[in-house]
Length: 438
Ligand code: CO
Image 1 (tube, protein in one colour):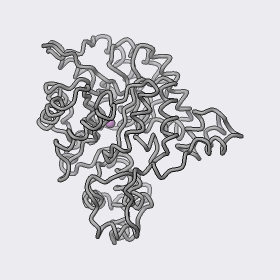
Image 2: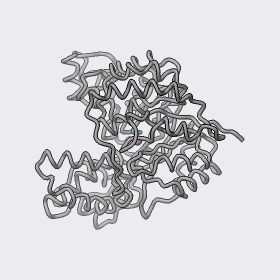
Image 3: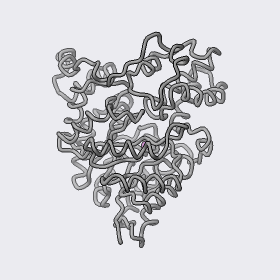
Image 4: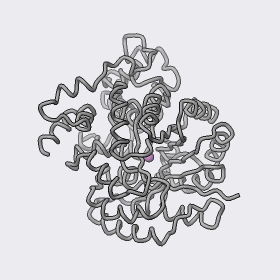
Protein backbone atom coordinates (compact mmCIF):
# COMPACT_ATOMS: atom_id res chain seq x y z
CA UNK A 1 0.00 0.00 0.00
CA UNK A 2 1.49 3.28 -1.04
CA UNK A 3 0.61 6.52 0.61
CA UNK A 4 2.09 9.80 -0.54
CA UNK A 5 3.16 12.06 2.32
CA UNK A 6 2.71 15.79 1.77
CA UNK A 7 5.33 18.36 2.69
CA UNK A 8 4.53 21.84 4.04
CA UNK A 9 7.49 24.15 3.55
CA UNK A 10 7.80 26.71 6.35
CA UNK A 11 10.64 28.99 5.19
CA UNK A 12 8.42 32.05 4.74
CA UNK A 13 6.92 31.78 8.25
CA UNK A 14 8.06 29.47 11.03
CA UNK A 15 11.61 28.85 9.79
CA UNK A 16 12.62 32.51 9.74
CA UNK A 17 10.51 33.24 12.81
CA UNK A 18 12.55 30.56 14.61
CA UNK A 19 16.00 31.44 13.26
CA UNK A 20 15.93 35.07 12.09
CA UNK A 21 13.55 36.65 14.63
CA UNK A 22 10.92 36.85 11.81
CA UNK A 23 12.97 39.36 9.83
CA UNK A 24 13.01 37.81 6.33
CA UNK A 25 12.03 40.60 3.91
CA UNK A 26 9.56 40.23 1.07
CA UNK A 27 12.07 41.15 -1.64
CA UNK A 28 14.29 38.25 -0.53
CA UNK A 29 11.33 35.88 -0.46
CA UNK A 30 10.48 36.83 -4.02
CA UNK A 31 13.97 35.83 -5.19
CA UNK A 32 13.01 32.18 -4.63
CA UNK A 33 9.19 32.29 -4.72
CA UNK A 34 8.72 31.31 -8.35
CA UNK A 35 11.13 28.38 -8.04
CA UNK A 36 9.35 27.19 -4.90
CA UNK A 37 5.99 27.34 -6.64
CA UNK A 38 7.23 24.67 -9.09
CA UNK A 39 8.36 22.19 -6.42
CA UNK A 40 5.00 20.59 -5.65
CA UNK A 41 4.67 21.19 -1.93
CA UNK A 42 1.44 20.24 -0.20
CA UNK A 43 1.39 23.84 1.05
CA UNK A 44 3.62 26.73 2.04
CA UNK A 45 3.32 28.36 5.41
CA UNK A 46 3.76 32.04 4.62
CA UNK A 47 1.81 34.24 7.00
CA UNK A 48 0.49 34.67 10.53
CA UNK A 49 2.31 33.82 13.74
CA UNK A 50 4.72 36.66 14.43
CA UNK A 51 5.07 37.76 10.78
CA UNK A 52 2.21 40.26 10.95
CA UNK A 53 3.63 42.07 13.96
CA UNK A 54 7.16 41.94 12.53
CA UNK A 55 6.09 43.47 9.19
CA UNK A 56 4.56 46.49 10.89
CA UNK A 57 7.00 46.85 13.76
CA UNK A 58 10.39 46.17 12.18
CA UNK A 59 10.20 45.81 8.42
CA UNK A 60 8.01 48.76 7.48
CA UNK A 61 5.92 46.39 5.35
CA UNK A 62 2.16 46.18 5.12
CA UNK A 63 1.45 42.55 6.11
CA UNK A 64 -1.62 42.45 3.85
CA UNK A 65 0.38 43.70 0.90
CA UNK A 66 2.96 40.99 1.63
CA UNK A 67 0.26 38.35 1.48
CA UNK A 68 -1.13 39.64 -1.82
CA UNK A 69 2.36 39.74 -3.32
CA UNK A 70 3.12 36.16 -2.24
CA UNK A 71 -0.21 35.02 -3.67
CA UNK A 72 0.74 36.59 -7.01
CA UNK A 73 4.18 34.92 -7.11
CA UNK A 74 2.88 31.55 -5.86
CA UNK A 75 -0.20 30.87 -7.99
CA UNK A 76 0.09 27.08 -7.95
CA UNK A 77 0.76 26.31 -4.29
CA UNK A 78 -1.68 26.38 -1.37
CA UNK A 79 -0.81 29.13 1.09
CA UNK A 80 -1.14 28.53 4.78
CA UNK A 81 -1.14 30.76 7.85
CA UNK A 82 -0.99 30.30 11.62
CA UNK A 83 -3.76 31.92 13.67
CA UNK A 84 -3.80 32.07 17.48
CA UNK A 85 -7.52 31.34 17.75
CA UNK A 86 -9.46 34.04 19.55
CA UNK A 87 -6.13 35.90 20.04
CA UNK A 88 -5.88 36.23 16.21
CA UNK A 89 -2.25 37.37 15.75
CA UNK A 90 -2.07 39.39 18.94
CA UNK A 91 -1.56 38.60 22.59
CA UNK A 92 -5.05 38.98 24.02
CA UNK A 93 -8.59 37.91 23.17
CA UNK A 94 -10.58 39.72 20.48
CA UNK A 95 -14.34 39.79 19.96
CA UNK A 96 -16.03 37.46 17.48
CA UNK A 97 -16.74 40.11 14.85
CA UNK A 98 -13.01 40.85 14.65
CA UNK A 99 -12.16 37.14 14.34
CA UNK A 100 -14.74 36.80 11.55
CA UNK A 101 -13.43 39.84 9.67
CA UNK A 102 -9.80 38.82 10.07
CA UNK A 103 -10.42 35.30 8.78
CA UNK A 104 -12.53 36.59 5.88
CA UNK A 105 -9.87 39.10 4.83
CA UNK A 106 -7.03 36.57 5.18
CA UNK A 107 -8.80 34.27 2.74
CA UNK A 108 -9.79 37.11 0.39
CA UNK A 109 -6.17 38.23 0.22
CA UNK A 110 -4.85 34.79 -0.66
CA UNK A 111 -4.77 32.28 2.23
CA UNK A 112 -6.08 28.76 1.53
CA UNK A 113 -5.43 26.96 4.82
CA UNK A 114 -5.80 28.48 8.27
CA UNK A 115 -4.06 26.53 11.03
CA UNK A 116 -5.58 27.60 14.30
CA UNK A 117 -4.36 26.84 17.81
CA UNK A 118 -5.11 27.89 21.34
CA UNK A 119 -2.33 28.01 23.91
CA UNK A 120 -4.58 26.32 26.48
CA UNK A 121 -6.18 23.81 24.09
CA UNK A 122 -9.48 25.41 25.11
CA UNK A 123 -11.74 24.54 22.19
CA UNK A 124 -14.06 27.43 23.02
CA UNK A 125 -11.22 29.66 21.80
CA UNK A 126 -10.99 27.78 18.48
CA UNK A 127 -14.61 27.38 17.47
CA UNK A 128 -15.25 30.84 16.07
CA UNK A 129 -12.13 30.77 13.88
CA UNK A 130 -12.93 27.27 12.60
CA UNK A 131 -16.48 28.22 11.69
CA UNK A 132 -15.38 31.53 10.11
CA UNK A 133 -12.71 29.79 8.01
CA UNK A 134 -15.19 27.33 6.59
CA UNK A 135 -17.75 30.04 5.96
CA UNK A 136 -15.16 32.03 4.00
CA UNK A 137 -14.37 28.96 1.87
CA UNK A 138 -11.03 28.11 3.47
CA UNK A 139 -9.57 24.86 4.80
CA UNK A 140 -9.65 24.86 8.58
CA UNK A 141 -6.82 23.01 10.27
CA UNK A 142 -7.23 22.77 14.05
CA UNK A 143 -4.26 22.15 16.32
CA UNK A 144 -3.61 20.11 19.37
CA UNK A 145 -0.81 21.85 21.24
CA UNK A 146 1.54 19.14 22.51
CA UNK A 147 3.14 19.49 25.90
CA UNK A 148 4.30 17.26 28.73
CA UNK A 149 2.91 17.55 32.24
CA UNK A 150 1.39 15.35 34.92
CA UNK A 151 -2.06 16.29 33.56
CA UNK A 152 -1.51 15.81 29.81
CA UNK A 153 -1.78 12.37 28.21
CA UNK A 154 -2.61 10.64 24.92
CA UNK A 155 -6.22 9.96 25.88
CA UNK A 156 -6.73 13.68 26.49
CA UNK A 157 -5.23 14.66 23.15
CA UNK A 158 -7.34 12.08 21.31
CA UNK A 159 -10.50 13.34 23.00
CA UNK A 160 -9.61 16.90 22.03
CA UNK A 161 -8.96 15.85 18.42
CA UNK A 162 -12.35 14.16 18.29
CA UNK A 163 -14.07 17.32 19.48
CA UNK A 164 -12.18 19.40 16.91
CA UNK A 165 -13.29 17.08 14.12
CA UNK A 166 -16.87 17.33 15.34
CA UNK A 167 -16.52 21.12 15.39
CA UNK A 168 -15.84 20.99 11.64
CA UNK A 169 -12.03 21.02 11.35
CA UNK A 170 -10.91 19.78 7.92
CA UNK A 171 -7.58 18.49 9.24
CA UNK A 172 -5.67 18.19 12.49
CA UNK A 173 -2.21 19.47 13.38
CA UNK A 174 -0.09 18.09 16.19
CA UNK A 175 1.82 21.19 17.22
CA UNK A 176 5.04 20.36 19.04
CA UNK A 177 6.47 23.86 19.42
CA UNK A 178 9.15 22.80 21.91
CA UNK A 179 10.40 19.84 19.85
CA UNK A 180 9.95 17.38 22.70
CA UNK A 181 7.66 14.83 21.03
CA UNK A 182 9.64 11.59 20.94
CA UNK A 183 9.43 9.00 18.12
CA UNK A 184 7.75 6.40 20.32
CA UNK A 185 5.14 8.75 21.75
CA UNK A 186 4.47 10.14 18.27
CA UNK A 187 3.82 6.59 17.04
CA UNK A 188 1.44 5.88 19.89
CA UNK A 189 -0.32 9.25 19.63
CA UNK A 190 -0.79 9.13 15.85
CA UNK A 191 -1.91 5.48 15.93
CA UNK A 192 -4.56 6.33 18.54
CA UNK A 193 -5.68 9.38 16.57
CA UNK A 194 -5.96 7.35 13.35
CA UNK A 195 -8.32 4.95 15.10
CA UNK A 196 -10.52 7.81 16.30
CA UNK A 197 -10.63 10.53 13.63
CA UNK A 198 -10.93 10.48 9.81
CA UNK A 199 -9.52 13.89 8.93
CA UNK A 200 -5.88 14.14 7.71
CA UNK A 201 -3.19 14.58 10.34
CA UNK A 202 -0.24 16.94 9.98
CA UNK A 203 2.81 16.86 12.23
CA UNK A 204 4.55 20.10 13.19
CA UNK A 205 7.71 19.91 15.24
CA UNK A 206 10.91 21.85 15.84
CA UNK A 207 14.41 20.41 15.58
CA UNK A 208 15.46 22.06 18.89
CA UNK A 209 16.29 18.89 20.85
CA UNK A 210 17.48 16.87 17.84
CA UNK A 211 14.46 14.55 17.83
CA UNK A 212 12.20 15.93 15.11
CA UNK A 213 13.42 13.99 12.04
CA UNK A 214 13.13 10.68 13.89
CA UNK A 215 9.75 11.72 15.23
CA UNK A 216 8.53 12.50 11.69
CA UNK A 217 9.64 9.12 10.38
CA UNK A 218 7.93 7.33 13.19
CA UNK A 219 4.79 9.50 12.90
CA UNK A 220 4.67 8.81 9.16
CA UNK A 221 4.76 5.07 9.79
CA UNK A 222 1.81 5.51 12.12
CA UNK A 223 -0.12 7.29 9.37
CA UNK A 224 0.72 11.02 9.40
CA UNK A 225 -0.44 12.62 6.15
CA UNK A 226 1.66 15.80 6.03
CA UNK A 227 4.83 17.01 7.80
CA UNK A 228 6.25 20.52 8.20
CA UNK A 229 9.84 21.06 7.09
CA UNK A 230 12.16 23.95 6.22
CA UNK A 231 14.52 24.10 3.27
CA UNK A 232 18.04 23.35 4.60
CA UNK A 233 19.54 26.89 4.82
CA UNK A 234 16.72 27.73 7.26
CA UNK A 235 16.34 24.31 8.92
CA UNK A 236 17.59 22.68 12.13
CA UNK A 237 18.24 24.40 15.46
CA UNK A 238 14.94 25.80 16.71
CA UNK A 239 13.46 25.56 13.18
CA UNK A 240 12.00 22.50 11.37
CA UNK A 241 13.85 19.41 10.05
CA UNK A 242 15.41 19.97 6.59
CA UNK A 243 13.01 19.54 3.69
CA UNK A 244 15.61 17.93 1.42
CA UNK A 245 16.57 15.28 4.01
CA UNK A 246 12.97 14.34 4.74
CA UNK A 247 12.20 14.07 1.03
CA UNK A 248 15.26 11.84 0.57
CA UNK A 249 14.29 9.70 3.54
CA UNK A 250 10.87 9.04 2.01
CA UNK A 251 12.10 8.33 -1.52
CA UNK A 252 11.65 4.73 -2.57
CA UNK A 253 9.35 4.04 0.37
CA UNK A 254 5.56 3.78 0.26
CA UNK A 255 5.49 7.34 1.66
CA UNK A 256 7.40 9.05 -1.20
CA UNK A 257 6.52 12.77 -1.33
CA UNK A 258 6.77 12.85 -5.11
CA UNK A 259 9.05 15.91 -4.91
CA UNK A 260 12.11 16.07 -7.11
CA UNK A 261 15.20 16.94 -5.07
CA UNK A 262 17.02 18.50 -8.03
CA UNK A 263 14.32 21.08 -8.38
CA UNK A 264 14.79 22.06 -4.77
CA UNK A 265 18.57 22.31 -5.13
CA UNK A 266 18.24 25.65 -6.94
CA UNK A 267 16.15 27.05 -4.08
CA UNK A 268 18.72 25.84 -1.55
CA UNK A 269 21.57 27.47 -3.45
CA UNK A 270 19.81 30.80 -3.97
CA UNK A 271 18.56 30.98 -0.41
CA UNK A 272 22.01 30.30 1.05
CA UNK A 273 23.29 33.29 -0.89
CA UNK A 274 20.41 35.52 0.29
CA UNK A 275 20.96 34.55 3.91
CA UNK A 276 24.50 35.92 3.83
CA UNK A 277 22.76 39.27 4.35
CA UNK A 278 21.13 38.09 7.60
CA UNK A 279 22.44 37.34 11.07
CA UNK A 280 21.71 33.64 11.46
CA UNK A 281 22.64 32.05 14.80
CA UNK A 282 24.92 29.01 14.80
CA UNK A 283 22.97 25.75 14.64
CA UNK A 284 22.98 23.99 17.98
CA UNK A 285 21.11 21.11 19.57
CA UNK A 286 19.51 22.05 22.87
CA UNK A 287 19.15 18.83 24.83
CA UNK A 288 18.32 20.84 27.96
CA UNK A 289 14.78 21.26 26.60
CA UNK A 290 14.23 17.52 27.04
CA UNK A 291 14.41 18.09 30.79
CA UNK A 292 13.23 21.69 31.22
CA UNK A 293 10.53 21.46 28.46
CA UNK A 294 10.97 25.19 27.92
CA UNK A 295 10.74 26.00 24.18
CA UNK A 296 13.94 27.42 22.65
CA UNK A 297 12.17 30.60 21.50
CA UNK A 298 10.99 31.31 25.01
CA UNK A 299 14.50 30.87 26.42
CA UNK A 300 16.10 33.16 23.84
CA UNK A 301 13.42 35.85 24.38
CA UNK A 302 13.91 35.61 28.12
CA UNK A 303 17.68 35.89 27.78
CA UNK A 304 17.37 38.96 25.52
CA UNK A 305 14.91 40.60 27.94
CA UNK A 306 17.22 39.99 30.89
CA UNK A 307 20.27 41.31 29.11
CA UNK A 308 18.38 44.49 28.19
CA UNK A 309 17.57 45.00 31.86
CA UNK A 310 21.11 44.09 32.96
CA UNK A 311 19.77 41.00 34.75
CA UNK A 312 21.66 38.41 32.68
CA UNK A 313 23.17 36.87 35.84
CA UNK A 314 19.65 35.86 37.01
CA UNK A 315 18.99 33.70 33.95
CA UNK A 316 19.61 30.28 35.54
CA UNK A 317 17.48 31.09 38.58
CA UNK A 318 14.60 32.29 36.42
CA UNK A 319 14.75 29.18 34.23
CA UNK A 320 14.34 27.11 37.40
CA UNK A 321 11.34 29.18 38.45
CA UNK A 322 9.53 28.62 35.12
CA UNK A 323 8.28 25.05 35.86
CA UNK A 324 7.12 26.12 39.32
CA UNK A 325 5.06 29.00 37.93
CA UNK A 326 3.71 26.72 35.23
CA UNK A 327 2.59 24.20 37.86
CA UNK A 328 0.96 26.98 39.91
CA UNK A 329 -0.97 28.04 36.82
CA UNK A 330 -2.40 24.57 36.13
CA UNK A 331 0.22 23.43 33.57
CA UNK A 332 -0.47 25.68 30.55
CA UNK A 333 1.56 24.71 27.45
CA UNK A 334 4.43 27.16 27.00
CA UNK A 335 3.37 28.75 23.72
CA UNK A 336 2.29 32.34 22.89
CA UNK A 337 0.87 34.05 24.93
CA UNK A 338 1.37 31.65 27.88
CA UNK A 339 5.14 31.44 27.34
CA UNK A 340 5.34 35.23 27.79
CA UNK A 341 3.02 35.26 30.81
CA UNK A 342 4.91 32.46 32.58
CA UNK A 343 8.29 33.95 31.59
CA UNK A 344 7.51 37.44 32.89
CA UNK A 345 6.09 36.14 36.16
CA UNK A 346 9.11 33.88 36.73
CA UNK A 347 11.32 36.92 36.23
CA UNK A 348 9.25 38.98 38.68
CA UNK A 349 9.25 36.20 41.28
CA UNK A 350 13.05 35.90 41.17
CA UNK A 351 13.90 39.58 40.93
CA UNK A 352 11.57 40.67 43.77
CA UNK A 353 12.62 37.70 45.92
CA UNK A 354 9.00 37.23 47.02
CA UNK A 355 6.83 35.06 44.80
CA UNK A 356 3.72 36.83 43.41
CA UNK A 357 4.38 40.02 45.40
CA UNK A 358 4.43 41.75 42.00
CA UNK A 359 2.17 40.33 39.29
CA UNK A 360 1.61 41.26 35.68
CA UNK A 361 -1.85 42.28 34.49
CA UNK A 362 -1.74 39.33 32.10
CA UNK A 363 -1.25 36.71 34.80
CA UNK A 364 -4.18 38.15 36.76
CA UNK A 365 -6.32 38.05 33.61
CA UNK A 366 -5.26 34.45 33.01
CA UNK A 367 -6.18 33.34 36.54
CA UNK A 368 -9.44 35.25 36.13
CA UNK A 369 -10.19 33.03 33.12
CA UNK A 370 -9.86 35.74 30.50
CA UNK A 371 -7.60 33.58 28.29
CA UNK A 372 -9.70 30.45 28.71
CA UNK A 373 -9.62 27.38 30.92
CA UNK A 374 -6.36 26.24 32.46
CA UNK A 375 -5.59 22.56 31.74
CA UNK A 376 -6.32 21.77 35.40
CA UNK A 377 -7.90 23.99 37.99
CA UNK A 378 -5.57 26.39 39.75
CA UNK A 379 -5.31 25.63 43.46
CA UNK A 380 -7.39 28.08 45.50
CA UNK A 381 -4.39 29.03 47.68
CA UNK A 382 -2.42 30.13 44.60
CA UNK A 383 -5.45 31.77 43.02
CA UNK A 384 -6.03 33.91 46.09
CA UNK A 385 -2.44 35.16 45.92
CA UNK A 386 -3.11 36.34 42.38
CA UNK A 387 -6.70 37.64 42.31
CA UNK A 388 -9.33 38.72 44.82
CA UNK A 389 -12.42 37.59 42.94
CA UNK A 390 -13.87 34.31 41.71
CA UNK A 391 -12.68 33.22 38.25
CA UNK A 392 -15.08 33.40 35.31
CA UNK A 393 -16.53 30.30 33.75
CA UNK A 394 -17.86 31.85 30.51
CA UNK A 395 -16.07 31.68 27.20
CA UNK A 396 -13.84 34.76 27.56
CA UNK A 397 -14.81 36.35 24.21
CA UNK A 398 -18.48 36.36 25.29
CA UNK A 399 -17.58 39.24 27.57
CA UNK A 400 -16.16 41.42 24.78
CA UNK A 401 -18.06 44.16 22.96
CA UNK A 402 -17.93 44.04 19.13
CA UNK A 403 -14.78 45.74 17.89
CA UNK A 404 -15.00 46.51 14.16
CA UNK A 405 -17.37 49.50 14.11
CA UNK A 406 -15.60 51.18 17.00
CA UNK A 407 -12.17 50.79 15.38
CA UNK A 408 -13.44 52.03 11.99
CA UNK A 409 -14.73 55.16 13.71
CA UNK A 410 -11.47 55.70 15.63
CA UNK A 411 -9.24 55.79 12.55
CA UNK A 412 -11.66 57.02 9.88
CA UNK A 413 -9.56 60.13 9.30
CA UNK A 414 -6.45 58.06 8.59
CA UNK A 415 -7.83 55.09 6.63
CA UNK A 416 -11.09 53.41 5.70
CA UNK A 417 -9.53 50.22 4.32
CA UNK A 418 -10.82 47.16 6.23
CA UNK A 419 -7.41 45.48 6.25
CA UNK A 420 -5.94 48.62 7.85
CA UNK A 421 -8.70 48.61 10.45
CA UNK A 422 -7.71 45.04 11.37
CA UNK A 423 -4.02 45.97 11.60
CA UNK A 424 -5.04 48.84 13.85
CA UNK A 425 -7.15 46.61 16.13
CA UNK A 426 -4.28 44.16 16.61
CA UNK A 427 -1.44 46.66 17.06
CA UNK A 428 -2.96 50.14 17.52
CA UNK A 429 0.13 52.29 18.11
CA UNK A 430 2.45 50.40 15.77
CA UNK A 431 -0.15 50.38 12.99
CA UNK A 432 -0.78 54.11 13.34
CA UNK A 433 2.95 54.82 13.17
CA UNK A 434 3.15 52.61 10.08
CA UNK A 435 0.22 54.38 8.37
CA UNK A 436 1.90 57.74 9.02
CA UNK A 437 5.15 56.58 7.39
CA UNK A 438 3.45 54.86 4.44
CO1 CO B 1 6.29 26.13 15.08
